[in-house]
Length: 389
Ligand SMILES: [Mn+2]
Figure 1 (tube, rainbow, N blue to C red):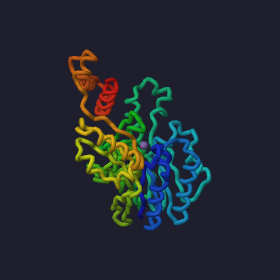
Figure 2: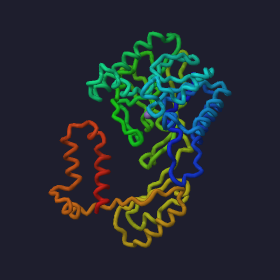
Figure 3: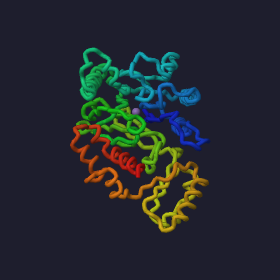
Figure 4: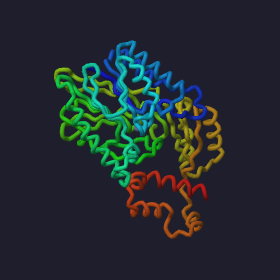
C-alpha cells in the first residue's frame, strides 16, 4: 500500500505583483506526475487545498484536471478539508461538495470526522474543527474561546475511539488530520490565518492501531513522533513558499509505503523543485553588494535589507536600480538600521526604550496569544516606531 501524503496547497494564494507568468498548478502537477510515474495507490490531501472556500473557477477547474489525471491512472484520491476551504458550519456548501455529489468513484471528501475504507486502508479523518461551530450552540455560549478549544479537543479524542470500533482489523490504519499539534513547530500559516488555535498533543490522538499519522496545517515540514507508540506524525508542510521567512525551507510532500504484513510505514520526503524562490539580499557593506548572485535574483522574489549606513550611498542606489530591473520580483528595500533610540525616546517621553516597554507589557500581560506572537508584535511595533521617525 503506497500513497502520497500532501497538504496545504493553498491553490489560489495571491501571487506577488509582477509574478505574471506564475502557473498556480506547477507544484501540484509535479506531485501528480510523481504519483503517476511511481504508480502509487492513493493520493491523500490533508487539507487546505484551496486558499478559500470559494476559489476562482480556473482554480477549481485546474484542481479537477489533477483529480482526473490521478483517476485515469488508477490512483484514488482522499481529500480532507482544512480551515481554508472547510466551512465553520458543516451544513454550508463548499466547492469540494461537488465531488461527493457527483459520487465520482475513487474520490473521497471528508468534511466531518469519519471513518473510511479506501483501497486496502482504514482511514480515520479529522478535518479542521471550527470553534465557531460549538460557540453557536446554546450550551457553550458562556464558555471562553480557550475552553471551547479544550472541549473540541476532547470531542476529537472521543471521536477517534468511536471511529476505531469500525475499522477492518486486518488492514492497516492511518489517521488523516488537519490540526495544530502541541509538539509541532508553527510555520508561516500564522500570517495567512491569524487564528487562536488550541493545539492538541500527539499523545492524545495516537492509538496503537495507527501506522502513520498524516497531518496538515503547519506549513513547516516536520516529522514528529508519539512517545507511547512511537508512531510518526508527519506534516509535509506547504507545497509552496509564500514568504521570505520560508526562504531556506524545503517544500514538498511524502511518499509513504505501509507494509501489508507488518503494517509498518516507510516514508521519504520528495522535494518540490518548482516552489517559489525567495532571495534576501542583506547589505552591511560594499562587499555584500559585490557578492550578489544575479542568476538567483532573476528567478526569485527579492528583497534588500539595508543593515547599516553605507560609505558609498551611490553604489547602493545603483544596486537597487539593478535589482528592480533584473529580479523576477522586487518587493523593496527594508531599512534595518538601528533606531536612533534617543530620538524616539525624546519624542515619546520615554524613560525606557519602546522595545523594552513592549517586552515588559507582554511579560506581565497574562495572554497566551501575546506570548506566542511576542516576536512578531515586537517586530511590528519597532517598524511602526521607525515609520514615525
Ligand atoms: Mn490550515
